[in-house]
Image 1: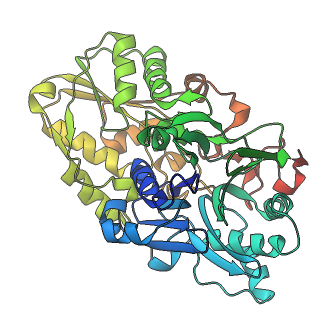
Image 2: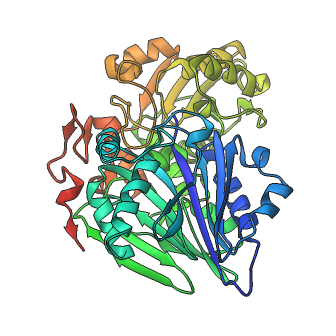
Length: 471
């Protein structure tokens, strides 16, 4: 699976921090590197112009001292990307910079627009020219149209009316940094205080990296403007929200706090719930690193079965979900995991993993453990079966590729080669997260989505974004 992006914006007092915003963004992006490894980019404002640099690869691969020194500005935004809408190429790197009658702004986006193609066709018909196939450029063109006839808050509100999908945005407009979260709050976005400034970012771990103070989350439907103060505009209000449950299960760093919930504690509770729902006699509890570690600790603590690492990860190999192409994913499994034979040989192993998507990676991991001498392998999964695609920023697979969409639990168990298989229940997952089910997006688990998607079932509580109530 692939989450689209990570975003960050920083604002500093011009007199106290004239030229160094890029280095702060650089370190924040490294803290968000898990959210995307295809490309990275930074745009800053120096008091006169927007300076931008972006390219393919990891943050540390693309940016060096010379590139950062050329980005001399006191405020700016940054982005790390994995493609969901728009292919993996230079033209789709973010932030996008857009020049218009009133100046230049830069924009970066985490999420995915369901109505991207329709909006792009309308804009092209009106004469707009696109340089990429990214949905972020669509948002940029829509915002330009509105900025030329309205003030900032109204321009953003009118742009949001047209967008169907998920989006957390950071925008650099003059010396202001703007954050926008969609009315259902699919993707996380939070605000922190830095010495002489502020930060807005996808995850609180980036704030910690910069030794900042976490202030709060951006509310769904809210726009915040960072300058010498935090200015809030509640543009839309919705009865329920739809934070992506996979942020807690897999994507976010365990040390991040999302909507008031520490991800580490959520994953620990997932393991505890698995232990209660499916008690299993075994010799050891072992995680699939890294995303299964915290849940395995929770499972071991609740069950009394000893925790022991049966797999060791080579941390110099990229995460398989981030690598394009099935062949690369399968090769990466062999490259990055090795068994600790002494910990598993002759033992009954409870193997904790976050999810099963296609089943190919799970099968290869179980084969590894079997060849390491395990007597039996009981797979315990920290999310319910994934039966439907995600249209809102997670490129996990087509419905045909999702193993649980067309196989029973026993069928999946057979395909991955486990001696037994159990998925956490949806109620158990919701309990572990600690957020009401009505405020989570669980479309990939239920086939019922919180917004209208052509050909899919939609919850009656909310259909289209233009039905939202102005705040």
